Length: 278
Image (cartoon, rainbow, N blue to C red; front, side, top):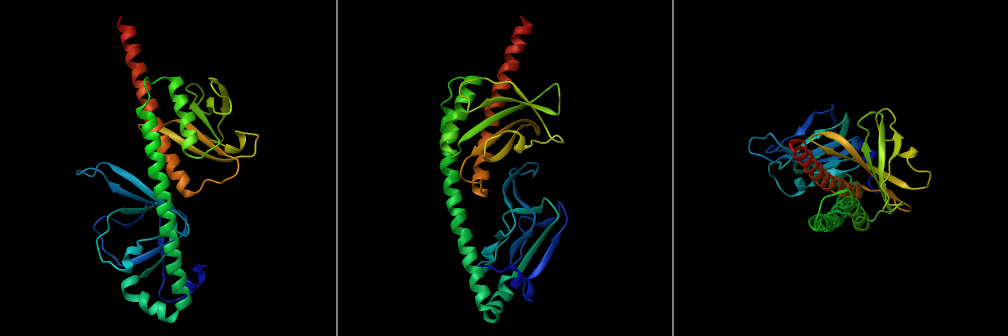
């Protein structure tokens, strides 16, 4: 097992302290460090336009994640930007200069570090395979929708439930009249029923513990259009917690459903305009 305290006690590993929104490195930067996240969270993102006015979040790095392990055998510029989304603490070692010496002086710790990196590689490959498979299935289901309406959106939710290994999904819409309340519109435990159950938010946030009296593991995902959080999907499981790989898939699922609901809203707005003009 990787012993973080022993790494910290060695001279070769240095602590890195980042303030919230502080950049660790940017695209095209060089350094030979391997990093380990000790506290909190970092965001990995990349520009998606030449003008650098659009970005895409690629991943989040959480406690005990190891990254930029490519420094073990290559020297190349960074391909992404990494920023602390909260006040964070990292551990780093210059792999090109100090890893060999560290390995000679602390062979057990060096071996455990390499074993841990291999474990993370295998875990990420497994998550990537799950992500690609689930994304393909979801995209296929969306493309097969003949008409975008409430019935077909909720049918899509039913099909997605089977693709992403969850037992149930609840769909909430924001209450446009009372900002501290949301409305449960669909629950796969009550199939084919359009619901209108009002639930209260806790300090403007969704309190999962209040949503169900049954013993589930739960994960919520906001659905947004133009940075406005308009809906929530809540995923429920009986027997398994949601790991990081699951949450990545659920984020993609939620983005895809947001797009479908957005299209439905645009179509409704066009129909309303036609009705008013007539």
